[in-house]
Every structure is written in C-alpha cells, then in structure tokens.
View 1 (cartoon, rainbow, N blue to C red):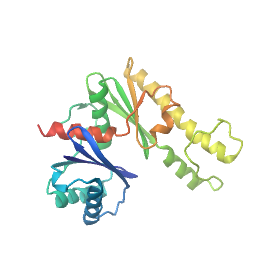
View 2 (cartoon, rainbow, N blue to C red; view 1 turned 135 degrees about the vertical axis):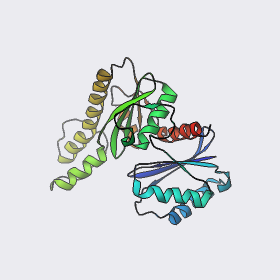
View 3 (cartoon, rainbow, N blue to C red; view 1 turned 135 degrees about the horizontal axis):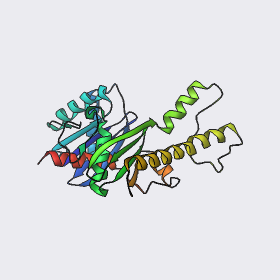
View 4 (spheres, one colour; view 1 turned 90 degrees about the horizontal axis):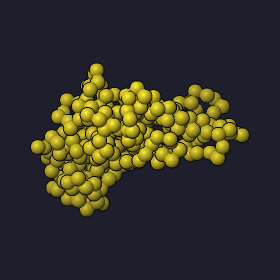
Length: 256
C-alpha cells in the first residue's frame, strides 16, 4: 500500500492507495509547528480507525508547499513505517515534461495535478485548483506542462479584505440570489463568489487563446471547487482527489 501526503498551506490531505485504488482519505489542518512525534501519533490513530495495519504501508510520497513541515512529515514516515518517503519535485522522473523557464519553482501540488489530469484526460487540459490560491495549470497535447496562473483564492481574498477594511466583515462563500447586493453582506457575497467565477472564466478564455488550444478539458479540483463548477462556462468536470491521484501515478512511475 502507498501513503500519499499532500501538504498544503491550509490543509494536509493523506490518502492510502492499494494499487490505483484510493481506499482511505484524511484531511487535517496544516500546523507549521508540527513535530514528527505528534504526527506519528495522529497518523497511527487514523490507521487504527481505518483498520489499516501500518506494516501494510510499503511506500510513501510527499507533496508539500510548506517547507517548514516537510521534514517533520518525512521523519514521521521514517519512524512510523521505516521507509524513506519520495519527495515530489520537478527533479523527479515524471510522466510529463516540465517545459517552463524555472522548473524548480513550480509547486509540487501543481505537478501532481498536471500529471493526474494528463493521465486521465490527455492533452490539451487546464486544471483549476481552488485552494488558498487559485491555481491554473496547463498541459498541451504532447504532455508538456507549459505554465500556469496564480491568484489569491476566494477565502484568502475575503480574509485580507476584512482585515484591511474596518467596515467590512467575513462572509460565507456561497452564491447569493442576485449579483446586485442590497446589503453590505450581500454585496460582499456577490463580489466574492461571482467575482471568482468571472476571474476563472476570463483566465481560461485567455489561456485557450494564448496556448492555441482547440477543445481543452478544463478540470476543477480543491476544497472549494464544487461551489463554483456549475457557474463556470468552461469547467467540464470536478476531480476532488486529483492531487492524490497524481501522487499515486508519480510514485508508481518512480518505482519501475
């Protein structure tokens, strides 16, 4: 069995695979002060709840965009399972080509998403990942990762706006009935929700034009994806486990 760890700025998602099948999944808040011992206790409890014996875990892969905790997770895997986790980066052998100016700068989660999207849908494809940031990652028909777009995610934007504007407050990320808000709360909800939809569709439209794509597959992933999919003109499918799936593919590719 494979343990796949996706360490994000807000949440850490762990998945246990048997072959290509995702058997168990766990989501927790990313704690930048985590220690290996604390993580080991937490994961051991999760394994017991999932009825998975730790001896069954034979390999592990870590995808992290939070360098301060990457070492703690690697130590946890070593101490709990007695295996060396594979750390995802652009330097690993990959089933796609990273064709950008500075490959070492691309986030590990973005690599995993691109690999999974191309593996399932082929090129041309665009992944929209709704998280702390909203990421757009693009793979052409040859399986080349050709770059992307990064912008603040809706929760990040809302938190920063509420912090800087004394008379504004946090609101839920939900679609209001009308675009024109008749209260401050409704106006904030509209701007946050429909503004995000507008950003996404405009960016996808520009990406298609610039990359000279014909009929790309546009895939949404990330914790907030389901909220926006039905409002977008371009998003065709939702893959909530896309990053974990990419990690499984990359782990298998490196075990050959």
